[in-house]
Structures are given as structure tokens and as C-alpha cells.
Length: 467
Image 1 (cartoon, rainbow, N blue to C red):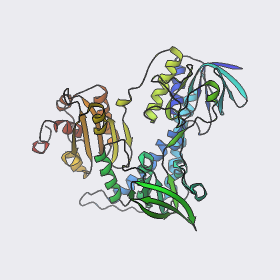
Image 2: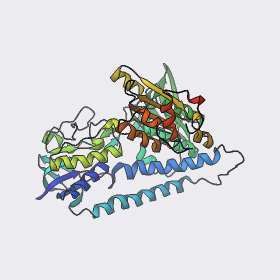
Image 3: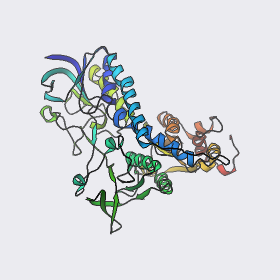
Image 4: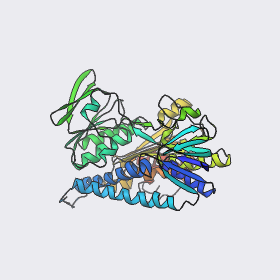
């Protein structure tokens, strides 16, 4: 039997971060991976391929809708298959550069391809071979949900995995669910020329952000030709010839819509099945996620878990990676390191992008019983006017007494880049005075953060540039 200091189960961002930190600590480590290739969701079927296709759609869209007077551009050709093949080639390249080559340089890490299963608190079995370790980190990720819609399996559908490598572009696409995945894929396919309809169960396309921003984003998507239906209850699906028909209820009225393809974007289920967690007493909640404490420790003290497989508050690639690093250190050194999730930003890579960090107005009201918020239009940001991209909004929440910045949410081009500054402001507990006294470059979109800070104390419509 092979013995290790640490065994990491998984092969994505969280698993690799744990393995890298263990290697730095010179701990003898095994990395057991099954399912997706090395790199997990992000590089193979998540961030890298989806953002590659989104960028292609952006180029296509802005060539036709750049709004610059006196400039006429023509798109001579759009080859869907070639765009997809380019995306898949980039995935292969980054998987080799960022995972396979990295793994080869980890002196103390042994990679094993195969499904791991616990047989005791200190032992797993992989490919019939038994391995033992003092500590474990589980980072097995998650799998797309298939909701209990009558006839959906018989009708057929695609998840994000299949949608990223379609051989043929659908003429019509129904997206069930919104959120980051649904919104990004809806806009991407729409800009490629597919007629897209979003069917969202709730009243917001992304309830975790500010409603004024998500309502504006829904309006923008609608203007681009995407049909956005909220408060929808999908009832059933069926095939009619070469079409797929979805029946749903909205406002008490029964409706039907047909399309070439259905994309499911209704969340993910943690990959906890078949790991033998019951054998070792690791607690799993009703959503099949591993329950962890703030130090990523499970109910079985020598077993830690990170990323999408856990019950943590944010399921993002950066959080998975950081959790993996800290979990490995906590496991091997007995430290109690944790993540401040309130200072972790999110981004939905639509165009404009939707990004945020910290409190929303609703969250501040629930926790403090009061809200000190301001919203500013990008019509008041000179660089946005120059770019002809004034459709965005920025909203900031502060502590009413201390003026500490508690949350920033942005809908704008490159909001994912802008939110990095807001992340530091929230993390470092800066105040609006700190921002007002700063000197951001003019003209830039990042000036929006200073302008919204100014709006708490001044009428920004009466200010000149660079104030």
C-alpha cells in the first residue's frame, strides 16, 4: 500500500491549488482525478472556452454596432464551426500549459487517473489500488442539474459542456434558467445569429445582484433581440418533428415555444456520489454538498473539502483555488486560515458585464436595517460617453456613520476589471473620503467609482471633469 501525507481528490482549480501548496510544504501528495480532464471545469468546459466564444460574439456584434460616426465596417464571413474549433484548440493549449506542465514540475506530487473512493478514514481505493494518508482534500467539483421537467430527457437537451462544442449552430435556442451561465450563453448564441429565448423561474435574471442593474441588463438583452421571460414555470418538453417544444406557465397563462435545441442552465449538483463519504462519516447536506466549517474541514476532522463540492457561500474559480491553498495548509500544518467571502467579487461576462462585491441594498437592509446607497449612470462618466457605451450603471452602499464602503455593483463594459478596485476598497475597509481624495486617470471607466463616491455628498451633474 502506498502511503502519503496528503491525498487530493479532484483535478480542477481547488485540487491543483491544494497540490501546489502541499508541494511547497514538501508533503508527499497524491492527486487522484476522474471525470473531466486535468484542469476541471474552468479550463475545459467553463471559463476559458465560454469567454473565448463570448469574445468572438463581442467582436461580431461591435463590428456592426460600434456607434462611431463616419465608420462603416462589414463582416464578410462568420464560420461557426471554425470559431468553435479555435476555442477547443485554445482549451487544449491552456490545459497543457497551466495544468499538465505544472503537474510535471511538482516534485512531491504523484498524479493518478481514476475514481477515488474512501474505504476508511485514512484509506481510499483507486483503480483497485489502496492508498493511505493522514489528511485528505476533496475537490471533485459539480455537474449540471437536469430539472424534473416532464419529458425533458426524452426530448433531449444540452448542458454547457455540449454547447461549447456543437458541430452545428442552432437556428433557435431555448435557455431554461438564467444566472451567469444562462445569460452568457444566451447572448453569445444570439450574437452568432441564433434566435434565443430565456425562461427564468424567478422574477430576476440574477437575484444576487442589485435589481436596478439586472433589470437594465435584461432590457439590454431584449433590445439585442433576446426574449427574456421571468416568473416562468416550465411544465414539460416534447419533440415535434425536428423541433423541441417547451410548455410553460407565465402569469397563469399556458404558453409553448419551439426551437432546435434546449440549453439547461439551472445550477449544478456537487459531485459527492460514489466517494464513500458515508463510510467515513462526512456530512452531506440536502443539496448533496459536503458541509465544511470556515477552515474547510468536514465533520471528519482529517478530511477537508473545497470548491463546488462544498456548502460554501461562493462557488467561483478564484474561491476554489484559494480554498484549496488554505485547506492544504490547514490540513498539513494545523493552521486555521479562512476566506473573507464578503470581499470576493463576482462577474457575469455578458456585454456589458455585470460585476459586484460586498453588500447589495437588500443585504444591507437585512443586516443593518438601513441603507445608504447611491446609483450613478454611465451617462455621467466621460469615458463611457467617448466610447458610446453609456448604458451602464454603478451602485455603491456605504455605512451611514463611518462612510466605509460596504458594496459596489457595476453594469458596464469591462466591469470585471473595474470590480478589482472595488474589491480592494471593500477588503481594506476604505471610506468614500479615501476614494474622493484619490486621483484616477482621466478619461477612464474606473472614474465611475470616484463619481459614485462623490454622489453621496455632491450633485455630480454640476461638476466638471477631473473633480
